Length: 119
Image (cartoon, rainbow, N blue to C red; front, side, top):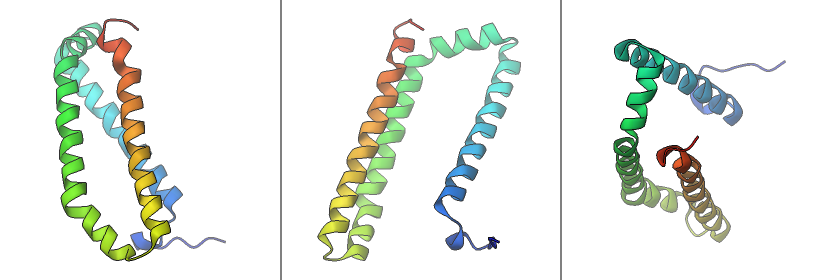
């Protein structure tokens, strides 16, 4: 029997990822529902979403840049200090950084047809 602790450091990474995913879906649904009610209808909301597409791209780019700056100047030095002289850990960290960059690039490239008026 698995005993769940209320202390976050003892939670499994799968549980944390699952709770974060469910939380993001719920918050996204709430935001979309509010947007549809403000716009008056689903087609009006979709039209406003398409019109704001480029501004949302700018918003995401600024958000990505802010997250990267916090990582680069604040968090990464702390992580590198914690791992010390472990070349394997430093290699894994670089690989993780590249993976995150590729994931963000893939997400934006997959959104490209929608920005250009396609699907």
